[in-house]
Amino acid sequence: MAEAENIIIKDTLDGLGTDAYSDYLAHALCLAGSCRLKYNGEERELQAGDLMIVRKGKLVERIRPADDFRVKVIYVTSEFIVLSTPLSNYGVKGQLALFRNPIMKLDAGQRELCRRDFEMVEARLAQTDHHFRRDLLIASVQMLIIDFFDFHSHLYGVDNIPLQSATIMSRFLNMLENGTYREHREVNWYADKLCVTPKYLSEVSRKISGYAANYWINRYTVLDISRLLRDKSLTFVCISDLFGFSSPAYFSRYVQQHLGVSPTEYRG
Image (cartoon, rainbow, N blue to C red; front, side):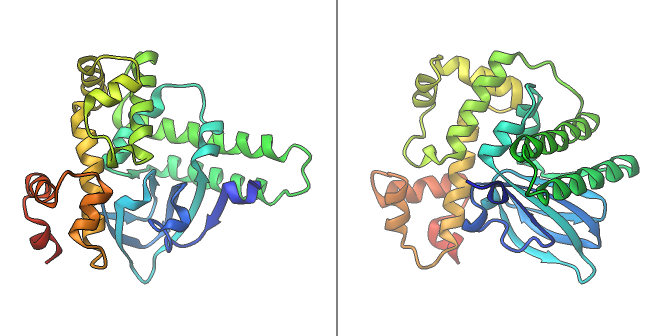
């Protein structure tokens, strides 16, 4: 894949959450104005000076920018993020926190540093004749990520997460982000793939994120189901089959349990 495809720079949030950017992480710096959006089922507002990092674009809905809204967005593929992420287990904590709230409120100094980081990536991306362009871009994205870690740690503090625990949690979440929950929703299955016991996986998950492993499995599942339920071209039977439910009745009970309403009521 060409580097121009690994990194895409835009000045609008149009397309965020669509299939066009399904394999990209979005990093959006609000330059002016504000934008309201729904993320992970909750209303959020991106304001001037805020940094928003979205790992899973499908969590974003109903983007409503104000007339004076200006933004710079850097999309980076998941593969290139892995290449560019420094050897630190802090990223796992940040990943979990950003899943719950993707918006960071930056102070004036952080805002200026972030703006310069964005400009550096854009400038380096334009250097198409650089003989070491791939390494150059990895280095520029890594600087961006290191500063993001620093911003986040100032907001939320730094936890001393053991490397083994961080690795297990990261692999667990990566499986969920890849959609394995559509076929597998048992903690035992994930524990087996990670070569740990179900009890240990849940203990690690609870220690790092505050939630047991089963919470994350159901959270990813419910968010995906709710997105599909909003697509009225899909029948309930079709959605049930996509997730491997044994029957539409079982699917209906699952939706009722986790969304508080039946599929019919949710679709309205």
